[in-house]
Every structure is written in structure tokens, then in C-alpha cells.
Amino acid sequence: MKKILFLLVALGFFIFPMTVFGEELIPNATSGILIEADSGKIIFEKDMNKEVAIASMTKMVAQIIILEEIEKGNIKWTDKVKVSKNAADMGGSQIYLSEGEVITIDDLMKGISVASGNDATVAMAEVIAGSEEKFVKMMNDKVKELGLKNTQFKNCTGLDEEGHYSSAYDQAMIARYLVTKHPKVLEYSSIYEDYLREDTENKFWLVNTNKLIRFYEGADGLKTGHTDAAKYCLAATAKRNDLRLIAIVLGENDSKVRNSETMSLLDYGFNNLKVDVLKNSGEVVKKIKLDKADREIVPIVLKDNLYVIEEQSSNKNKYDYKVVIDEFELPIKKGDSVGKIKAYSNNKVIAEANLTVLYDIKRISFLSLYKKTLLDLITGVY
Image 1 (cartoon, rainbow, N blue to C red):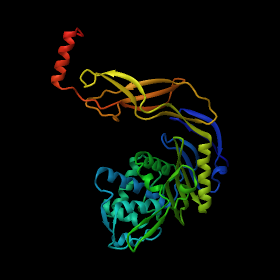
Image 2: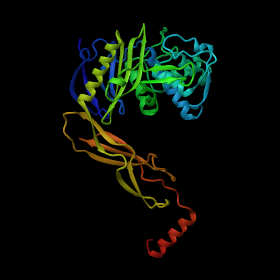
Image 3: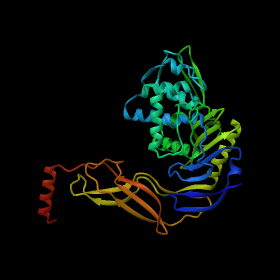
Image 4: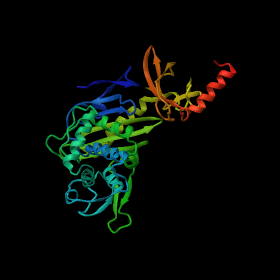
């Protein structure tokens, strides 16, 4: 039975009466979903909460943890890892690591992102957590932190195992978190081909398992998957004209059909949606007076673009705006959030963006404050 699905836009306050039939877009998939990355809003779904095997798409959570460990300073890209027998013996997709081999974390991340290496993933798990078992606990904790209900991991690679599953919706939220919070991943997932150990006798050619990054306009990630239980799966992301979409397709019988149906989802989104930028980042929206700052008048600007996502056919609408400035203490740096600007239509918030200061603001010194106060008294300001 065909399901009628509605297109959700902006922050979920508008619903367009656009009918989508799941069987027509991804008829062969067990389940799937299409979302807009920045807002996380659902454009299309087919059995999005169904718990299924997801194969190597599991590794997206491993990538999140690796990138967070890098950002915390616990590991560095240049760190060298000595490969254990356990990691080297991993089956399935691999980059053919040898026991005792020394390889950088940068190359391991490349092996995970491009070639979906199980051996590379386990090697990183052991570096970060000491064992795959402890790393898998970190992965499950991360999923809970993200508030996802239909995911449970038994290993860090995605190899078939009883009780190892996720859903199209959960995978979309994981992918969204990965590309919006840790966009560094796209530098790896967008590589189509490269080499490991290039200057050695063990030179290994990597070719990306995700063919969309070569053949689909705007595609730069994200993760493929294939096992007997999961069949063929794909988490794909692409960006065109400031619109980034994430498509998840699970349980396809054939890799070509998987790719074709994923592209159908992305095509649907790009053909029917557009980004309408209401105000650009850096635009001054207000000026405030700060008595104890080194600059008395401080311009407040948009930290990010303020935009709405609309149907391609919609006309440019008029919006009302409200600027809300938070209480903050000096000093404050350019880029720090100091409030929000909200766009309203028919008295409903349809978009919002963070605000920041135009330049760094320092607290004025006691001596400078004394001189300023004295000058104000002399000139009659008080």
C-alpha cells in the first residue's frame, strides 16, 4: 500500500501538500529516508523506524568518536599505530593490514572512510578504547546521547551479528550529526581514489566504495554497507546551492539498484526544494551599547545565514524579524554566540540563526574606565 508522505521544511512549521509515493522512489529498498541536513527535517520516508542490519554504515559512529578524540587532543592525525593480530585478522572489507605494521591515524581514517576497512576500524578502536568491546560501548553510549531508540551495536565494523541493528531514521540522524558537527569527515569520504603506503613496497590502492561521489553532482559522502543480512545499504550526502541533503537506503538486493534509488531520493529533493537566504552571515542586524567595553558601540551580526527551505515553485515571501540578545560577559570573541535572529510568517517562527559580534570585544581597564568617566563628567554627559 502506498504511503502519502508530506514534505517538512524550515523548522517544521510549514507542511506542503506534496505527495510522495515510497514505492515509486525506492521500490526495492527495505527502508529509507531523505532529510535536509541543517534542520534535520524529513522530506521522505519509507519504514524509517524499522530495525534492520546496516553493515558498514555502523562505521559512521566509529568515525564520530575518532573525530571527537582528535578534537579533544587525545590523539593526533600523525600518531603512529602498531597493528594488533586481532585487527589484522579481521575479515570482510579491509585494507590488508599486517600484524605489527605501523600506520598513521590519518591513513587508518582514510582506510575506514574510503575502503570501509574492518581492520582499520578495529585498529582505531583499540587505540582509543583499548579493545573493540570497550569501543563498542562508547558507540552505544554515543547513540543514546543522540537520543536514538532503534540502534544497538555488537561490533564496530558492521559484520553480521545477532542484536546488531539500526533504522533508516537513526542512520540519518547519525549521518547528520557527522556532517554538521564534524565536517572534517567529508575530506575523507569525498576521496574517490588514493594510495596507502605509497612510498613503500606495500603500496595499496584505495577506491571509494561509494560511486556517487564520482558520478552524482554535489556528492561528497558518506558511507556504504554490504553483508548477507543487511544486503546493500548506503548513506549518501550531496550539496547544491547551499542545500545539503542526506539520503539513507537500506536492504537493496543489488549495488546498482541501491545507487540508482539513492540518486532518485536526492534528485527528488534537489528538484523540488530550494534554499531562500533571508539574511547573510556577517550582516549587521543591531548595534548595542556596552559601557564597560573597549568599544562603546558594538555591531551585532549574523553568525550564519538565515534561510528557509521552500518548494522550487514558491514565490519569495515576506517575513517579520525579531532579534534576541542574550546576557553575556566580557571579553567576547567574534564567532561567540550572543543571541538569535528569528524569522516569522503568520506569527510563527519559520527560521532562526545565531548572532555574534563583528569583532573581538574586551573589558575596558579600570584606568581607562576612570578616564572615560571623568571625560564624560567634564563634557556633561552625566
